[in-house]
Length: 334
Ligand SMILES: NC(=O)c1ccc[n+]([C@@H]2O[C@H](COP(=O)([O-])OP(=O)(O)OC[C@H]3O[C@@H](n4cnc5c(N)ncnc54)[C@H](O)[C@@H]3O)[C@@H](O)[C@H]2O)c1
Image (tube, rainbow, N blue to C red):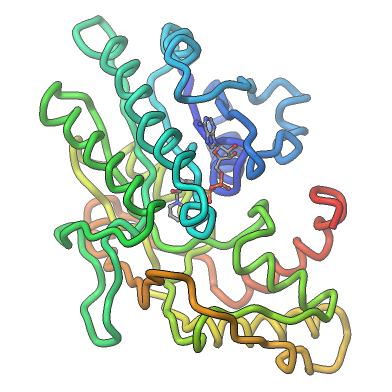
Protein backbone atom coordinates (compact mmCIF):
# COMPACT_ATOMS: atom_id res chain seq x y z
CA UNK A 1 0.00 0.00 0.00
CA UNK A 2 1.44 3.41 -0.88
CA UNK A 3 1.94 5.87 1.94
CA UNK A 4 2.10 9.63 2.43
CA UNK A 5 3.95 11.43 5.19
CA UNK A 6 2.25 14.58 6.48
CA UNK A 7 4.54 16.72 8.65
CA UNK A 8 2.71 19.06 11.01
CA UNK A 9 -0.36 16.84 10.68
CA UNK A 10 -1.47 17.65 14.23
CA UNK A 11 -1.68 21.38 13.47
CA UNK A 12 -4.40 23.51 11.88
CA UNK A 13 -3.96 22.93 8.14
CA UNK A 14 -2.18 19.59 8.60
CA UNK A 15 -5.07 18.01 10.51
CA UNK A 16 -7.55 19.28 7.93
CA UNK A 17 -5.34 17.84 5.17
CA UNK A 18 -5.15 14.46 6.94
CA UNK A 19 -8.97 14.33 7.13
CA UNK A 20 -9.21 15.35 3.49
CA UNK A 21 -6.73 12.65 2.38
CA UNK A 22 -8.33 9.98 4.57
CA UNK A 23 -11.70 10.59 2.91
CA UNK A 24 -10.32 10.95 -0.61
CA UNK A 25 -8.07 7.91 -0.80
CA UNK A 26 -9.04 5.08 1.59
CA UNK A 27 -6.32 2.83 0.15
CA UNK A 28 -3.43 5.11 1.13
CA UNK A 29 -1.47 4.85 4.38
CA UNK A 30 -1.21 8.19 6.16
CA UNK A 31 1.75 8.79 8.46
CA UNK A 32 1.63 11.97 10.53
CA UNK A 33 4.89 13.35 11.93
CA UNK A 34 4.53 16.04 14.54
CA UNK A 35 6.54 17.18 17.55
CA UNK A 36 3.38 18.52 19.23
CA UNK A 37 4.42 22.10 19.92
CA UNK A 38 1.82 24.30 21.64
CA UNK A 39 0.07 24.54 18.21
CA UNK A 40 -0.20 20.79 17.62
CA UNK A 41 -2.72 18.52 19.30
CA UNK A 42 -3.16 14.75 18.93
CA UNK A 43 -6.79 15.22 19.89
CA UNK A 44 -7.45 16.83 16.49
CA UNK A 45 -6.94 13.37 14.97
CA UNK A 46 -7.95 11.14 17.87
CA UNK A 47 -10.70 9.26 15.98
CA UNK A 48 -8.44 8.55 12.98
CA UNK A 49 -5.55 7.44 15.19
CA UNK A 50 -7.79 5.22 17.36
CA UNK A 51 -9.28 3.50 14.31
CA UNK A 52 -5.81 2.82 12.87
CA UNK A 53 -6.53 4.97 9.80
CA UNK A 54 -3.65 7.31 10.68
CA UNK A 55 -0.24 6.33 12.06
CA UNK A 56 1.05 9.00 14.41
CA UNK A 57 4.80 9.51 14.88
CA UNK A 58 5.77 11.89 17.67
CA UNK A 59 9.06 13.30 16.37
CA UNK A 60 10.83 16.52 15.51
CA UNK A 61 11.58 17.17 11.83
CA UNK A 62 15.06 18.42 12.80
CA UNK A 63 15.88 14.90 14.10
CA UNK A 64 17.72 13.37 11.14
CA UNK A 65 17.75 9.79 12.45
CA UNK A 66 14.01 9.80 13.16
CA UNK A 67 13.23 11.26 9.72
CA UNK A 68 15.64 8.83 8.04
CA UNK A 69 13.79 5.89 9.61
CA UNK A 70 10.50 7.21 8.24
CA UNK A 71 11.79 7.57 4.71
CA UNK A 72 13.22 4.02 4.92
CA UNK A 73 9.66 2.73 4.70
CA UNK A 74 9.49 1.55 1.09
CA UNK A 75 5.83 2.45 0.73
CA UNK A 76 6.36 6.20 1.29
CA UNK A 77 5.95 7.92 -2.06
CA UNK A 78 5.26 11.49 -1.10
CA UNK A 79 5.57 14.00 1.70
CA UNK A 80 3.29 16.93 2.38
CA UNK A 81 5.55 19.19 4.42
CA UNK A 82 3.56 21.53 6.66
CA UNK A 83 5.41 21.38 10.00
CA UNK A 84 6.51 24.87 10.93
CA UNK A 85 6.39 27.57 13.51
CA UNK A 86 3.63 29.70 12.04
CA UNK A 87 2.76 32.71 14.20
CA UNK A 88 4.27 36.04 13.08
CA UNK A 89 4.00 37.65 16.53
CA UNK A 90 5.92 34.76 18.14
CA UNK A 91 8.60 35.07 15.44
CA UNK A 92 9.16 38.68 16.51
CA UNK A 93 9.61 37.85 20.20
CA UNK A 94 11.44 34.51 19.71
CA UNK A 95 12.81 33.92 16.22
CA UNK A 96 15.17 31.02 17.09
CA UNK A 97 12.49 28.31 16.97
CA UNK A 98 11.50 29.54 13.48
CA UNK A 99 15.03 29.11 12.19
CA UNK A 100 15.22 25.60 13.63
CA UNK A 101 11.88 24.19 12.54
CA UNK A 102 11.28 26.09 9.33
CA UNK A 103 14.78 26.13 7.88
CA UNK A 104 16.79 23.35 9.58
CA UNK A 105 13.70 21.10 9.67
CA UNK A 106 13.07 21.53 5.95
CA UNK A 107 16.76 20.94 5.22
CA UNK A 108 16.68 17.71 7.27
CA UNK A 109 13.67 16.40 5.33
CA UNK A 110 15.26 17.34 2.00
CA UNK A 111 18.40 15.43 2.96
CA UNK A 112 16.32 12.34 3.76
CA UNK A 113 14.36 12.67 0.51
CA UNK A 114 17.62 13.04 -1.41
CA UNK A 115 19.06 9.91 0.19
CA UNK A 116 16.00 7.70 -0.29
CA UNK A 117 14.41 8.97 -3.48
CA UNK A 118 17.35 9.77 -5.70
CA UNK A 119 19.63 7.23 -7.25
CA UNK A 120 17.63 4.29 -5.91
CA UNK A 121 14.80 2.31 -7.44
CA UNK A 122 11.96 4.37 -6.05
CA UNK A 123 11.07 8.02 -6.33
CA UNK A 124 8.85 10.32 -4.35
CA UNK A 125 7.45 13.82 -4.51
CA UNK A 126 8.14 16.57 -1.99
CA UNK A 127 5.18 18.96 -1.61
CA UNK A 128 6.45 22.01 0.24
CA UNK A 129 3.64 24.04 1.81
CA UNK A 130 4.53 27.71 2.01
CA UNK A 131 2.88 31.08 2.38
CA UNK A 132 2.16 34.24 0.37
CA UNK A 133 4.02 36.15 3.11
CA UNK A 134 7.34 35.33 1.38
CA UNK A 135 6.45 38.00 -1.20
CA UNK A 136 6.32 40.84 1.34
CA UNK A 137 3.41 43.22 1.10
CA UNK A 138 1.46 45.28 -1.44
CA UNK A 139 0.12 48.81 -1.71
CA UNK A 140 -3.63 49.25 -2.14
CA UNK A 141 -3.49 49.43 -5.96
CA UNK A 142 -0.64 46.96 -6.64
CA UNK A 143 -1.39 43.87 -8.71
CA UNK A 144 -1.66 40.63 -6.72
CA UNK A 145 1.36 38.35 -6.16
CA UNK A 146 2.17 35.98 -9.02
CA UNK A 147 4.71 33.15 -8.97
CA UNK A 148 7.15 35.63 -10.57
CA UNK A 149 6.92 38.19 -7.77
CA UNK A 150 10.36 38.56 -6.14
CA UNK A 151 10.69 37.40 -2.56
CA UNK A 152 10.75 40.23 0.02
CA UNK A 153 9.81 38.74 3.41
CA UNK A 154 9.21 41.16 6.29
CA UNK A 155 9.16 39.08 9.49
CA UNK A 156 11.40 36.36 10.90
CA UNK A 157 8.48 33.96 10.15
CA UNK A 158 8.21 34.87 6.48
CA UNK A 159 12.00 35.06 6.09
CA UNK A 160 12.35 31.54 7.48
CA UNK A 161 9.66 30.27 5.10
CA UNK A 162 11.38 32.05 2.18
CA UNK A 163 14.68 30.40 3.11
CA UNK A 164 12.98 27.00 3.15
CA UNK A 165 11.37 27.65 -0.27
CA UNK A 166 14.80 28.49 -1.70
CA UNK A 167 16.30 25.28 -0.28
CA UNK A 168 13.50 23.17 -1.75
CA UNK A 169 13.96 24.82 -5.13
CA UNK A 170 17.73 24.32 -4.92
CA UNK A 171 17.31 20.58 -4.26
CA UNK A 172 15.31 20.39 -7.47
CA UNK A 173 17.83 22.37 -9.54
CA UNK A 174 20.92 20.79 -8.03
CA UNK A 175 19.92 17.18 -7.41
CA UNK A 176 16.78 16.74 -9.51
CA UNK A 177 14.54 16.06 -6.51
CA UNK A 178 10.87 16.00 -7.51
CA UNK A 179 9.36 18.98 -5.67
CA UNK A 180 6.42 21.37 -5.89
CA UNK A 181 6.16 24.53 -3.80
CA UNK A 182 2.81 26.07 -2.92
CA UNK A 183 2.32 29.62 -1.61
CA UNK A 184 -1.08 30.10 -0.05
CA UNK A 185 -2.96 33.06 1.35
CA UNK A 186 -4.49 33.23 4.87
CA UNK A 187 -6.53 30.17 5.82
CA UNK A 188 -9.55 29.91 8.10
CA UNK A 189 -11.52 26.93 9.36
CA UNK A 190 -11.62 24.46 12.27
CA UNK A 191 -8.63 23.38 14.41
CA UNK A 192 -6.67 26.66 14.34
CA UNK A 193 -4.91 27.35 17.62
CA UNK A 194 -6.78 30.18 19.36
CA UNK A 195 -4.00 32.74 19.19
CA UNK A 196 -4.69 33.65 15.55
CA UNK A 197 -7.06 36.42 14.52
CA UNK A 198 -10.27 34.52 13.71
CA UNK A 199 -10.50 32.19 16.75
CA UNK A 200 -9.33 34.98 19.09
CA UNK A 201 -12.04 37.31 17.84
CA UNK A 202 -14.75 34.63 18.03
CA UNK A 203 -13.76 33.81 21.61
CA UNK A 204 -13.68 37.44 22.70
CA UNK A 205 -17.07 38.11 21.13
CA UNK A 206 -18.44 35.11 23.03
CA UNK A 207 -16.92 36.46 26.26
CA UNK A 208 -17.82 40.11 25.47
CA UNK A 209 -14.16 41.15 25.84
CA UNK A 210 -12.30 43.82 23.81
CA UNK A 211 -11.64 42.78 20.20
CA UNK A 212 -7.99 43.69 19.45
CA UNK A 213 -7.44 45.01 15.92
CA UNK A 214 -3.94 46.07 14.85
CA UNK A 215 -3.33 49.68 13.74
CA UNK A 216 -6.35 51.27 12.08
CA UNK A 217 -7.73 47.91 10.88
CA UNK A 218 -7.19 48.67 7.19
CA UNK A 219 -4.60 45.93 6.62
CA UNK A 220 -5.86 43.59 3.92
CA UNK A 221 -5.73 39.78 3.93
CA UNK A 222 -6.88 37.35 1.25
CA UNK A 223 -8.92 34.59 2.98
CA UNK A 224 -9.28 30.99 1.85
CA UNK A 225 -11.25 28.18 3.50
CA UNK A 226 -8.84 25.50 4.68
CA UNK A 227 -10.45 22.63 2.73
CA UNK A 228 -9.90 24.57 -0.49
CA UNK A 229 -6.23 24.79 0.44
CA UNK A 230 -6.18 21.02 1.00
CA UNK A 231 -7.70 20.29 -2.41
CA UNK A 232 -5.09 22.57 -4.01
CA UNK A 233 -2.26 20.70 -2.25
CA UNK A 234 -3.52 17.39 -3.59
CA UNK A 235 -3.89 18.91 -7.08
CA UNK A 236 -0.28 20.13 -6.85
CA UNK A 237 0.81 16.65 -5.76
CA UNK A 238 -1.06 14.97 -8.59
CA UNK A 239 -0.78 17.43 -11.47
CA UNK A 240 1.88 20.00 -10.61
CA UNK A 241 4.96 20.19 -12.81
CA UNK A 242 8.13 19.21 -11.01
CA UNK A 243 10.17 22.16 -9.75
CA UNK A 244 7.28 24.61 -10.12
CA UNK A 245 5.66 27.01 -7.68
CA UNK A 246 1.88 27.42 -7.42
CA UNK A 247 0.07 30.32 -5.76
CA UNK A 248 -3.13 29.34 -3.95
CA UNK A 249 -5.88 31.83 -3.15
CA UNK A 250 -9.44 32.73 -4.01
CA UNK A 251 -9.21 36.48 -4.68
CA UNK A 252 -11.13 37.20 -1.51
CA UNK A 253 -9.57 40.33 0.04
CA UNK A 254 -10.88 41.72 3.31
CA UNK A 255 -9.73 44.59 5.46
CA UNK A 256 -9.20 43.27 8.99
CA UNK A 257 -11.77 45.67 10.39
CA UNK A 258 -14.47 44.47 7.98
CA UNK A 259 -13.70 40.85 8.79
CA UNK A 260 -14.00 41.55 12.51
CA UNK A 261 -17.33 43.33 11.93
CA UNK A 262 -18.60 40.31 9.96
CA UNK A 263 -17.55 38.01 12.81
CA UNK A 264 -19.33 40.23 15.34
CA UNK A 265 -22.64 39.95 13.52
CA UNK A 266 -22.15 36.24 12.78
CA UNK A 267 -21.37 35.29 16.39
CA UNK A 268 -24.10 37.55 17.80
CA UNK A 269 -26.58 35.80 15.49
CA UNK A 270 -25.30 32.33 16.44
CA UNK A 271 -25.65 33.16 20.13
CA UNK A 272 -29.09 34.69 19.62
CA UNK A 273 -27.98 38.11 20.87
CA UNK A 274 -28.60 41.67 19.70
CA UNK A 275 -26.04 42.63 17.07
CA UNK A 276 -24.00 44.93 19.33
CA UNK A 277 -20.54 43.30 19.68
CA UNK A 278 -18.99 45.73 17.19
CA UNK A 279 -18.80 48.19 20.10
CA UNK A 280 -16.06 45.92 21.59
CA UNK A 281 -13.63 46.65 18.74
CA UNK A 282 -10.42 48.08 20.20
CA UNK A 283 -7.53 49.32 18.05
CA UNK A 284 -4.11 48.25 19.43
CA UNK A 285 -0.54 49.34 18.57
CA UNK A 286 0.44 47.93 15.21
CA UNK A 287 2.80 44.95 14.94
CA UNK A 288 6.35 46.07 13.98
CA UNK A 289 6.95 45.64 10.24
CA UNK A 290 3.29 44.77 9.74
CA UNK A 291 2.51 43.90 6.11
CA UNK A 292 -0.24 46.13 4.73
CA UNK A 293 -1.82 43.94 2.10
CA UNK A 294 -1.51 40.42 0.71
CA UNK A 295 -3.29 39.33 -2.43
CA UNK A 296 -2.76 36.16 -4.45
CA UNK A 297 -3.15 35.81 -8.19
CA UNK A 298 -4.01 32.10 -8.63
CA UNK A 299 -4.18 32.19 -12.47
CA UNK A 300 -1.38 29.65 -12.98
CA UNK A 301 -2.79 27.23 -10.40
CA UNK A 302 -6.27 27.40 -11.90
CA UNK A 303 -4.98 26.95 -15.45
CA UNK A 304 -2.40 24.21 -14.83
CA UNK A 305 -3.94 22.25 -11.97
CA UNK A 306 -7.61 22.66 -12.87
CA UNK A 307 -8.18 23.79 -9.29
CA UNK A 308 -10.45 26.48 -7.99
CA UNK A 309 -11.78 27.40 -4.56
CA UNK A 310 -15.30 26.06 -4.15
CA UNK A 311 -16.41 27.07 -0.66
CA UNK A 312 -18.72 30.11 -0.34
CA UNK A 313 -16.95 32.50 2.05
CA UNK A 314 -19.66 33.82 4.36
CA UNK A 315 -21.35 30.42 4.85
CA UNK A 316 -17.96 28.86 5.65
CA UNK A 317 -17.18 31.68 8.11
CA UNK A 318 -20.50 31.06 9.85
CA UNK A 319 -19.80 27.29 10.06
CA UNK A 320 -16.30 28.06 11.36
CA UNK A 321 -17.63 30.37 14.09
CA UNK A 322 -20.21 27.74 15.10
CA UNK A 323 -17.47 25.08 15.21
CA UNK A 324 -15.30 27.16 17.58
CA UNK A 325 -18.19 27.99 19.88
CA UNK A 326 -18.82 24.25 20.16
CA UNK A 327 -15.18 23.16 20.54
CA UNK A 328 -13.30 25.86 22.53
CA UNK A 329 -14.01 24.11 25.80
CA UNK A 330 -13.31 20.51 24.73
CA UNK A 331 -10.12 21.16 22.79
CA UNK A 332 -8.55 24.10 24.63
CA UNK A 333 -10.47 24.40 27.91
CA UNK A 334 -11.32 28.02 27.16
N1 LIG B 1 -2.31 29.29 8.56
C1 LIG B 1 -2.23 29.89 7.39
O1 LIG B 1 -3.05 30.76 7.09
C2 LIG B 1 -1.16 29.49 6.39
C3 LIG B 1 -1.20 30.05 5.11
C4 LIG B 1 -0.24 29.66 4.18
C5 LIG B 1 0.71 28.72 4.50
N2 LIG B 1 0.74 28.21 5.77
C6 LIG B 1 1.77 27.18 6.07
O2 LIG B 1 1.11 25.96 6.30
C7 LIG B 1 1.80 25.20 7.28
C8 LIG B 1 0.87 24.83 8.41
O3 LIG B 1 0.38 26.03 9.01
P1 LIG B 1 -0.66 25.97 10.22
O4 LIG B 1 -1.36 27.26 10.25
O5 LIG B 1 -1.42 24.70 10.16
O6 LIG B 1 0.36 25.92 11.45
P2 LIG B 1 0.15 25.40 12.93
O7 LIG B 1 1.05 26.24 13.77
O8 LIG B 1 -1.30 25.30 13.29
O9 LIG B 1 0.70 23.90 12.91
C9 LIG B 1 2.06 23.58 12.76
C10 LIG B 1 2.25 22.14 13.18
O10 LIG B 1 3.64 21.82 12.99
C11 LIG B 1 4.13 21.15 14.16
N3 LIG B 1 5.56 21.44 14.28
C12 LIG B 1 6.15 22.66 14.47
N4 LIG B 1 7.48 22.53 14.53
C13 LIG B 1 7.74 21.21 14.36
C14 LIG B 1 8.94 20.43 14.32
N5 LIG B 1 10.15 20.99 14.48
N6 LIG B 1 8.84 19.09 14.12
C15 LIG B 1 7.62 18.49 13.96
N7 LIG B 1 6.47 19.18 14.01
C16 LIG B 1 6.53 20.51 14.21
C17 LIG B 1 3.31 21.73 15.32
O11 LIG B 1 3.30 20.86 16.43
C18 LIG B 1 1.93 21.88 14.66
O12 LIG B 1 1.18 20.69 14.77
C19 LIG B 1 2.99 26.05 7.73
O13 LIG B 1 4.12 25.60 7.03
C20 LIG B 1 2.61 27.46 7.31
O14 LIG B 1 3.75 28.22 7.01
C21 LIG B 1 -0.17 28.57 6.71
